[in-house]
Image (cartoon, rainbow, N blue to C red; front, side, top):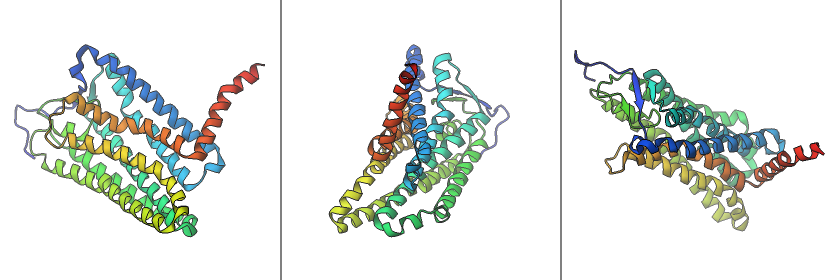
Length: 319
């Protein structure tokens, strides 16, 4: 890393200038993003309430779905309120410390989302391939052996990536064409050599989402092989995997496009790149509870029952 020259100064305050190309139309973005934010909070809160309140839904898979709802509920809170204020009141400033804290939470919780998909694939593998040992292998003491190492991996890599970014001198500028503190958007503003930051970013991407994707792929190959050998009864069991395949496919596709758009030279307009990166974080939070609520029969029944009670109980009390 090259030292700062005498006439240089490292910025401690940054401007998040995402969607600035829209000019006077930029405040209009408040409406769709606010609606998505409310939909995400409402759907995930409802899903979480239903799973926690119904003892019949306290199975390992439903607990993992509740964990996904917690992640999808918390992830938008780290960047959407600030983004909405930026659209509505043109509040675009953020300090370096605030930027690094936001970046760490977004990347760590985002990595946890990927990890939950791994645990769900592992749950389906045990349920379909080794059904007699399912409850034994999914018991909490044994399951923690899979949980703790992965959480340590996620925390260590993301903390290293954010810490290295915070050590950079920022003298190129202080304006990020983004709506939140994305790692590469901040690193691009650094002066000096950022090779280590780029390598750590690539290493983090390979050891978390890519490694998770490989593990999920291997798990489902084993599941499909077991189903094909088991005949018609196995095909019925395979239905439980479709939900997770849909979620994994959508989540990883958006993540891959968002990741490559900042690391491979392309002709995408800046607003499109920012939109893809924002959807990578916000869209799964809206998409996951709907998919799980519709595809999982037990959860769907209790969600409909809860919605029905909330709709008709006030009318009954009135009369």
